[in-house]
Each structure stands twice: as structure tokens, then as C-alpha cells.
Length: 409
Image 1 (spheres, one colour):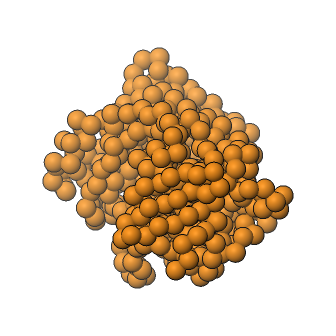
Image 2 (tube, helix red, strand yellow):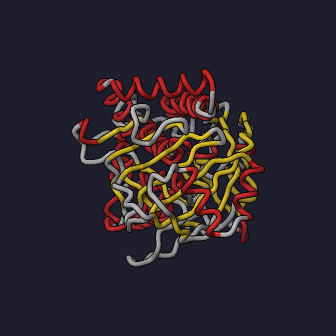
Image 3 (cartoon, rainbow, N blue to C red):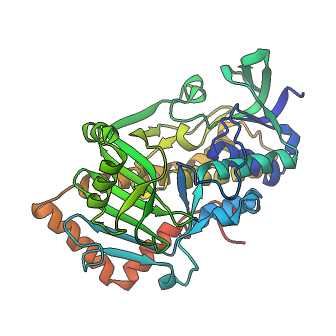
């Protein structure tokens, strides 16, 4: 095995896997000069298997990125769920009342607002695309990372040693790459947990993403390909522990009440899982010979389901910066070349983080002026065709300063 590469990406999650697939296929460098350092192996799924517990909402921009990475054609279309509508309402209003906000793909001339996809399937498709292009997968774990003037030196488990002109940290919120590069991050603990599970509901999900804002946190019911729904319920830590102790029947009763019975009775089809919610923002995404993508660079509140999309846009922007550097015969690991990536992504991600934190706080009002303001705002947007179209296109990911691989065509 070659031990010297142009780029080594640490971490085989969605952001890392998409990054290597794009670099191998779109950057202009030979695919064999790109390596993925990861021990994550995702087994194939048969068509009749239940949905993964973890699903993500893929925007149109992210679809374009995955198509550029030649990962989208590797997905099983039968396990993708296109959703045509999003319905958002506050706990003080009925789900179909004047105070509820509904986005419809038909209003902006689109076939859908995106897809609910299984996270593991997306990761596997990106990794398979990378290997098929000729990229090198190294099944090892990073132990030590040393940055030198002309290269980075990686010491890995199993006695593996690698060198690279550029190391990409896609190794999550507790990123070792970020630490070794001396890049600091601001962290905030929401003191909330997200409870996830798969449900069968009495009423059809109508290919609609439902989200009710409660004073304890938002509850989302996302449509799945097989007619089931994926629940993501954000609650404070104490309430989460109580919910986790309930029987399946008791938990389903709580879910039905919390969702205002919008999909009728519910049956739990999966195990339940929970994870703590925190935000993270790296002060810088780049250093000499190093760049961060995905959760290594930023973690935001999941209430709008944008975390995966931000990571995919990171991958597209970094590939664009590397490609431009190669065309201009620049060192791909230089701060100058990498700064283009940071400039394209960091401001956007910081603004998204701030918006999600504000929404999480603002929608928590259950009574009084706060609740009135929330309902008034939702109603005003719902009555304005122009505002609804603007927000729908923003959710679709077709507006703003996008990397070129995130644009159509």
C-alpha cells in the first residue's frame, strides 16, 4: 500500500465520505492520491429491512453534491422518501389552523422539498463511490498527527504511518485532528437530549414533515419510505430520562399527546435512542496542512435538520478550493488555498448556528407575549406567499452563496 498521499481524510461519516468521493472524482488529482482513514464499515441493507434509526433530511443542494460525488445513483430509490410539505406549528395552535405554517413544494414549482434518507445508506454510497473511483481506504485509527512544513505525518493503529500534503478532519465533535492542529472551538451545552425512534402511525404521514414546538422542545415526525415515521423529540435532560424509563405503550401515549394527535395513534417499531445536544463552532476551519469539515468544524441544534446538509456543503466547498488550487498550481495544503474554503463556509455555518439557537429559545414560550409573538409570526409568514416561497427555497437549499458542486447542472 502507498503510504504517501496528497490528501488524507480522517473519519468515514457522511461529511468525510462525501469529501473523499468528491476529491477522487472532481478535484483533478489522481484518485489513488486520496485516502480515507476510517474503521467504519457499513453492511448492506436488503430492500425489505426496516428503516435505520438515524435518518436525515437531504436538501436539493445536498442532492446535487451527492450526484457530483456519484453517490446518489448508488442509493436504493425505493428507500428514499421525497417529502412534498413541511407543517410547523406552536403548541398553542392547532396543526391545521391559521397559526400553523405550511410549506408546499408545489408553491415553488418543485416536485418535492427534499428527501428523508437513511444516514448509513448515504455513507455507504459515498464510500463505495470513492473506492470505485480508485481511492484508497485505510482501515486504521489515528493516534498522532504531526504537522511539518511540507507535509503532515500521521501515526495510526497497527503500525500504519502515512504522510499527506493536506489532512482533512472529519472525525466528529471530539476531533483529534482539530486538537492536533491547535484549532480551538466554542461549545455550548443545551442541556437537552434528542430522543429518536421509528413509529407506525394510525394516519398516513402524507409525505409531510411535521414539527410541533413545545415549551419543552420541538417534536418532529419525519416521513419514511415504508409509510412509517421517524420521531425526533427534543426535551430537557430530566424529562428525557423519564421518557426513556416508560414502557413502549406509555411512551407512545406521550408521543401522541405531544404531537397533538396529528397522525393518530402510534406504535413503537424500533428501539429508542437518545443523544445530548450541544453546539460547537471552531474558531477557524483551517491551518497549514489542515482543514475541518462537518461536526469537527460545527455542530448545530437539530431542530431544522440541517446538520448533515451543512457537512455536505463543506465537502463541496473544500473540493472546490482544492480543485482551484491545483488549477492555479498552488500548494493544496497552504493556508492561502484553504482560506477560500473557510471564507465560503464559516460565516454561513455560524449564522445557521445562531438562528437555530434563537429558534430553540424563542419557540419555547408557551404562554403570554412570547407565545403570542410566535403565533403571530408563523401566521404572518403563512399568509404571505412571497415569504413562504422565500423560506421554502431556503429550506430546499437553492439560494445563497453555494459551492459549484451544490448547484444544478
